[in-house]
Length: 348
Image (cartoon, rainbow, N blue to C red):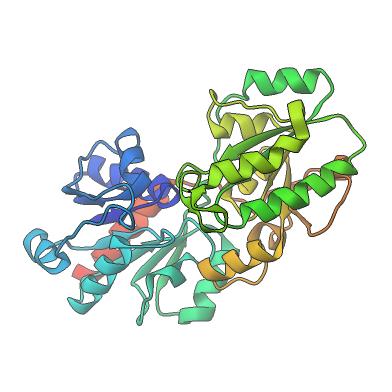
């Protein structure tokens, strides 16, 4: 049984589920949120249950115990969405029934989001950095397998031609990836940087689809995207909307990607694009709410620059090759094999 909610976890859980299904295993997907929309493009197995796009605004109910008792899964595999919902409920119910449990991390320290009182049987994680966080929390008890980073691929989408045309004209093309209450503060810092950047530039905003339409409590509950777009109005036609291509194709075509700690910073760094973490106080607050980290993980891995005050962005360079090598492309076959190994050990 596999459970996921957000896009990040689904990008890992769905391909692993597809591999397991192709190997002949029976897979029971339980889906909700943006991940449910993404699922059909990544896994051919239809869900046995699908919740709403946002349980906080459109609540739904599901009795976890009867579902587990009916399906009798050999293993429960969950993502680590933030905030999590069914993922945490399922893994805690599986723990009570002593069903083997697998956590799939799409972010460093994602295990913290599930509220586990005991370690899972297996954690599928990003890299050695995240493995160390698991060991610090649980010791040597859970198995840990590095399956790679969902933002890192062996082959990316083709660069967006609209972006490449801007670069050909000599513009420094900067993509801002925003989402969450911390984004307004990041925009303000970015504008301070742009004011001292000594090169002609263009800014491309890309708002997280899960967050852009949420109400902004500091601005009469209007959608966050309206708050963010209003802050960018002062930049005039230097802000360019490129809505057609995928975010990945925009990111790999840019000269620079700015965010807080988005997975897209990893995508940019691995593609040879300058990655910049706008590490404002609210970014660090949000990071602390989501993980046990007190440092931006991409900064700790030395693949992204940390910016806390105005700086000439044109002076920043892509990370060196030795740092880029710390980013591991995601391989779902490694995750599927680790799950099978776990089950063989349980049933031996």
